[in-house]
Image (cartoon, rainbow over all chains, first blue to last red; front, side):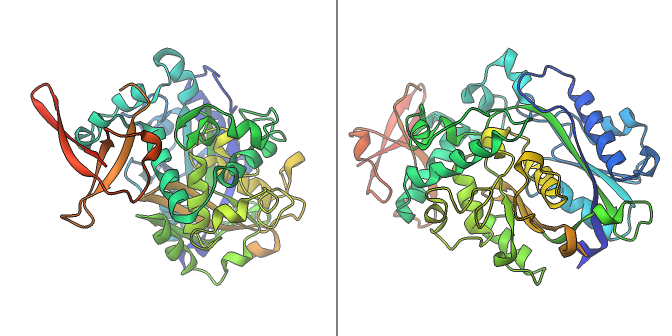
Length: 379
Length: 55
């Protein structure tokens, strides 16, 4: 498979937090330079750029730089670039980079994601109606009269899942509760104060049954990773994260099917999962879509929280996820997976030192995922 | 819109698989559940008639 002809050779992050009020280009440059240095490369070595979504008009702060911005800011001379809103999930940008490096089109691709929603919302407000009105799409005319917003989509998904599976808020809430416990150990996480299941259950209802703590938190920050040709002699091969399988698909189940068809590894081989949690229910759906749980079994699996805790059988969203860590929009989980696979998790390092990780991004018809390996499993 | 209101996807009996976003109206909102049978009515909004559903 083409995945074996590319590796993640370096990772980098800017300051990440609430209301940083820093220029998103500065954040992007900080993350990019950190990732390039981490890979043992110099700026001149980078000949590809890949991002999601890039410089496009969308909700305020959802994107902080485009490929052209980064080319200019860093003085890059790329041979290839990719970006856009309609790729299959935010990690589609890493899938595209892997295809480009693995096929030999390029040597080293800078992949990045920059957000500054937290600062952007200082001036425009954060109510979903404000956010939705910034998106002039033809299809919205069929929905807008009925009062939808981003959280109502999560609420509808959660409502239906609970009706079909018999799941309870007490079960699904563990996605948020465990994430908060992990965030307490992550100095860059947005929300680090302790949160109990009772705190979750008593939180403000946003779109029944979806409550405040089922919603991820806008932040500012940038994360970059370098995807290099696996046969490059310039990178630090011993720290490289290998890509065992990837998928970019038009649905979560399709993503799981595509991904597991590309590797001999199985869901039971996965040591940790960093799953997209823009809403808690999305992490539940990803657990099932990637076959880490059976259909309608994910809520039972996370009940009580012990199985998905850092010392459980499948540690989940160990940086606090997007729910408490902050909405790095798919790239936070990728960064965390790489840190953990390299043993760089610090206070929150998973005690069993995981070697195989699953990472996912997106929701509904917009999905991408990776199986990553570090340590002995990466060879 | 002023909450509380019920947002829903309704699948039409007349065409399986056709789901439309709508509101469920004229009922106790705590009684609304997935799978409940509903029928259409039209509410006027300016010069437009908006399809909504009730049990």
